[in-house]
Image (cartoon, rainbow, N blue to C red; front, side, top):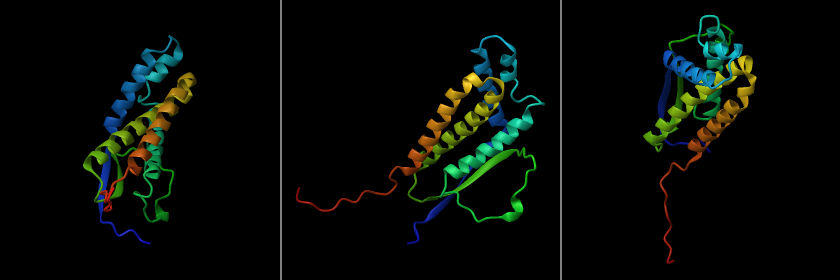
Length: 168
């Protein structure tokens, strides 16, 4: 049975510079609580010139993971001519989702915050796996909590409750 509920297209747009700023801030905080050593500077230098390619690649993957987490709201037709391995560093990342009209704006706002945090934490976790592996489990746990939170947000009842007539 095909869903005939009217849909609204919602674009979640994440500015690359803002994401990099948030990633850099969290990396700085992470490095400030680390013991002194060579890894401390490497963690803090996450968005420097020599490292930015790795960050861009992970950020692109994190955005695609977000699209997959939001499935079936982000389902799109297959486009064979779009598959390549060209490095990407767009000014912004956009995730377009089609939600039922019964969704609340507050739910959309919560999802935007959760997706933003997911992208930032995912990039940080990948970077820390290379520079300070001891810190990775706490970031991976945070990523899993964010994924679960996104799925919970998507599964909350969105329709009006209709109560049947009952003498009790």
